[in-house]
Image (cartoon, rainbow, N blue to C red):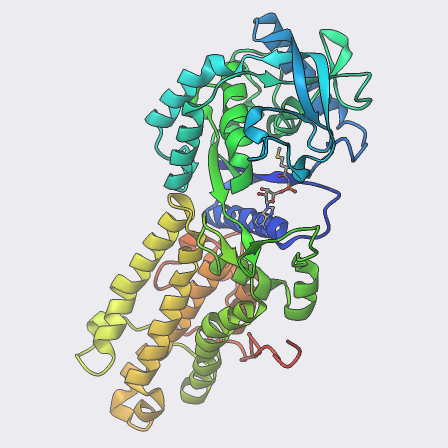
Length: 503
Ligand code: MSP
């Protein structure tokens, strides 16, 4: 039975213009999803658009989602986890929240970022968030990879330690005419979090009428078993790290079923936050038109250390493409295939370097098959599952490409070809180049699916050869897949250089 892996991303505001930060999050999720498919896991991928915000007066989500939200609210209300209270204070109309003294500037006033602020007295419903503070601290102590990277888990723990007060979950209908009605009070609608966050489970098949997690539908439990939620650093505290984990706990999710949170950093521009108001937002579609989706995907994955911020720069996108892809992987392919045609008529002879007498390049070939590739695979797997250092994972196929370009320099196949005694060594070198290219194609496929297909086509790697249904599978990334006598395809330039005059 394939393992199920469930990946979610945050919900983008629908009223935002195209934004490279949002694209990054989706590509990151897509790459991790493709990696899991490569491993043979069955992947459930959930992403969405925001249907909230007083400004975007959209109808509330589908019926199914509405039932989940109301079901959860009703059972928490029945369990005494929700109560009504009166709040009086200063309210920011723009941010749609009550303000506290913490929000006052040094002059004692609320700054312009809050827009119009007015005094309000209002009754609302509250969820007993702080009742679960100790549970959350214990959970974070018990599970050291609850949040990735580590420093974000520390940040979350510090925030939980300071947690006080409960969560306001409603707005009077008189003031908000959209939103999901509270099932226990028709004069109120739910406000934001029980609606926005619960989409992660409602669309995965959660049944709100079943309190006992173990009795939830099998489909839902299968999906929720390995769940990775990808969010930006700004929505860890308090939304996902505090509200969401506590909500799940309050409705009976066991600790082992808490989602893992992958918190990514931000792409900035010239050291500053990208911002709609100043108009300095990078548009991902303009870049895909100019450079192609794969060059952009590659830069988004390699140009930022997962978890940290990075500056977005078009020159970096180009140099990343040229350094890793054109100069290393593309170059290896463009050199290897013509050599296989020129020196062996396109036909590979499968040779194990362990059986060759010592000579130039022979130790390097043994090392490639016995050590470089197994260790690249190990690091690749670790970086894509445990540490989620996607930037490093995709350095592995590049390192293998560099190693092979070095092997070409050391062995100089064009010289070996002039000496009949060296035929076996020459055949071994050609086999090692083609076989490593095949493994490189598998490893780059989550980020560069098109280029990976291109390499496979040029190697003439057919599905019948792997015996699998999928063209790419991580299990095929083992040494020796290309059979003896295999004939490669015709070379075609794969990563044409980017024309930089337009910059
Ligand atoms: N709607 C909320 C999320 C609710 S989830 C139940 C939201 N939306 S957002 O449109 O502002 O952001 C969507 C995602 O993009 C968030 O994870 C956010 O962190 C991420 N990013 C927004 N700007 C970003 C960058 N400049 N760089 C990288 N990611 C960024 O927050």
